[in-house]
Image (cartoon, rainbow, N blue to C red):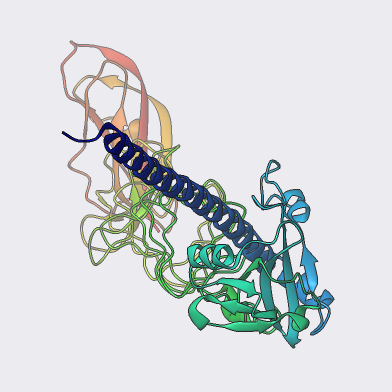
Length: 447
């Protein structure tokens, strides 16, 4: 049998070993939890510093000229959280210290003309352990740096990537602090950003290196826009004045004011100018004629000049018609026949070239129409010598006629053409006896 005392001793040893293992596990767990908490604090500190660095970078780009004018090689311009909040680069609730109570500031110095060198650095607060500052710098990536107890006068980049002397910025926060390098060289960050403000001597900072896509948004409040390529839009273009040195091509031009040109107004079809209000216009639909649309009249208070004027209807003038050449009359008429307008002129149809005029309703030559009215008495059927029409000497009678109300008269054919007498004869028998007739006749005489 096992001795009871010995058995009790063995149990005590086992319990002690269990307690030792438990203590080790608890210690490891506590250390792990503390490390995780520290890691979380380091990440939060890195995120806060990176947010400040991004806001500081934007501030420098937008205010490059002002910062450059106030910075020197040994006296940098200092930018705080409050300044970035007041200029809307950081939100109002952004704290100016990290989780370790260290204040975050930005410093920018001018090592050379038109050149800024900027860093972000923490000051004051708790001294972060070496492993902590290195972890924060790693979380910041390439720009991340730290101030080590091994080299407290410089900022070291992660894994020896870069190094900056703190004396350049007239500051020395001491070991246990972190930093970020912006490397703003000649106004340009390591990333090729487009500047909102002009940088003296550096127009390339405001120059795009690729096409600009605004994603369907507007470009507002622009002044002059200069382009060497095409301007294309599927919508309207609104402008006060549009100047083109080449051709303007459009489906329709709708102009509410006047239109000017230093050259021709050209149409490429059978159209021309058209009055939308009145329905008339001028156009050309063949090689020979310029026409008036809708046969509207053409009126002018000035002079019409042409090589030839052709009318298919009447030509009416309210003033005189003058010519420095001959007048060619194409209208033909027979002397002695009736006409209805005393203003008419014609040429004799017999080809003699005599000009006839409408006189007292009869075509007569040279204005030599003589009329007479006599009373004739005598038996019906007898020649009436009293009804003779004579022409004044030396003219000769070429035609004539007699007329009386309700009585048909005919020309006395026994009288030869060219004599000075013209007689009338009753053509009907009205019975025996003598009658008194009032006769109206005419004689056309030739001068």
